[in-house]
Structure formats: C-alpha cells, structure tokens
Image 1 (cartoon, rainbow, N blue to C red):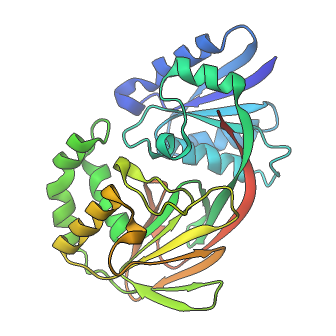
Image 2: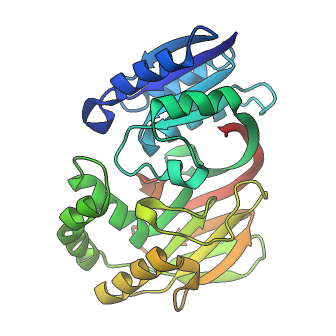
Image 3: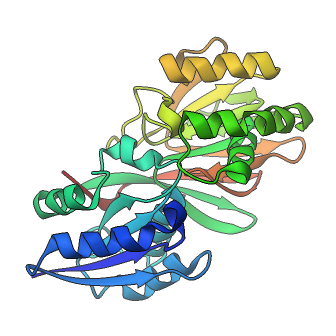
Length: 301
C-alpha cells in the first residue's frame, strides 16, 4: 500500500483546494494510505513536509505554483538525496498553475489519481538560490527585474485563475508598475566566465512559463543545466513586444535577448532589483544560483 501525504492550501482556487484534495483522496481508493494536511499560513507547507518527509513515500502538493514551491522547499531542506526523499506530485488549484503545463500534470483529481497510480518517478533538476534572506529552491524559473515586477503586479490583482481575462484585468497595474520601475542594470557572471548585462534576467528550468508563454524550447529539467536569458532595457511598447514573442514563439527568439545554458550564476545590480521564484516574489539581488542535477523524483505520467 503506497503512503501519500497530500499537502493542500485550502484557500487556493477560491477555496476549492480542500474539495480537490478530498476528491483526490477518494479517487486514490483503498489501495493507498492517504493523509491530508491543510496549511494555515505562508511557509507552513515547508515546515510540515520537512518534518514528515521520512514517513511517507509520496507527497502531493495541492494548490498553486507557490504551494508546490513550498513543498519543494520542505523536501530540499532535509538535505536528503532523491533516493531517500519521497517522490513529489502536484494537483493544481491555484491561479497561474504554470507547473501543470510545464510538466504535464493532470488538471483534475480523477485524472491525477489515475496518473499517480501509473506514474514513474523521474529525476528532475532543481535550482537553488542563495541570497540575503537565505536559501530557496525552484522547479520552474527564476526571474529578476522586469519579470519580477510584472509577476508582482499580476499577483496583487489576481482573484481567480490567471487566464487571459485575469491578464486583461491586471494589465493597467502592470503598465503602471513597469513605468515606475527604474530598471537598474543587472550584471550576470555565469560559469562560462563571461560578464553579461541587462535590465531583466530569466533563468529557466522548463520551457513553459505562465499564461501559455515560453522561455525557450531548449529548456529541459532533466539535462543538468538551466537556460539563462538576458533581456535588454525596454520601454512599455518594447516589453509588450517581448511578451508577444513569448506567447507566439519564445523569449529566447526575441530581438536583443541573449540565451546561454549554465550551471552556476551570480546576479548583482546597481540598484534595488526584485526577483521571483516559480511565480512568487522572494527578495532582491544580489543572488547566487546553482543547479542541483537530478535532485528530486517527480511523479510524471
């Protein structure tokens, strides 16, 4: 009998997280030993997963991409390797749900239960950021500068699933935030020893980003590398053009964007530059990022 810990943010998805967790518990059936844990505050998922990681075979995050990141943080904080850590699954119940598209997670409880029964745990790379606030892992992407400003503006206005309607609702706030942002220059030193400068940086572990956009088709969470995209300074119209390129092709194919695969990166800035991880604002530069190849087993169908 497989043991599961379902870690659910009950407030996610306008309160649907709790019902989706119960539906998944029921769908997993009598062949699974399932415990549901509801988080009560930010960081709670990390705390409970760190405590319970050695007691279960599988942990499933139920919520948004932020909940998945918290569960990831709890697993990584144990210092254990993938051979002893429980495998990680995800059932989306948030607003952006970028991880669902990036990894092909089933979007509904019944489908997730079927996928989990047949899932083959697969090793995936994890990015680890060290900054003034401590250490934090990410599974999807790291973004500094414009990327973090846009994410923060959208997060402040979202009230439901962040589809095109949510983007349209938040667009005026995004324009205001970008207009106010002074865009200090960011300096990047990667493991190829070449110095790069730009107004925004994206470090992608996966190809798919939020809202159907693409960082670069080359991004592969199983290759031991991450893809660094250096974005030049741009005005509002220039950023809109970059966004359109991300939607129809990829950020890597936008004019002026430089793309290189890396394993270690140092980010510094001349002023205050925020950064985000997996769609959640975290801190400000400077920051050091490294890739931990095959650090976790992800439950993929």
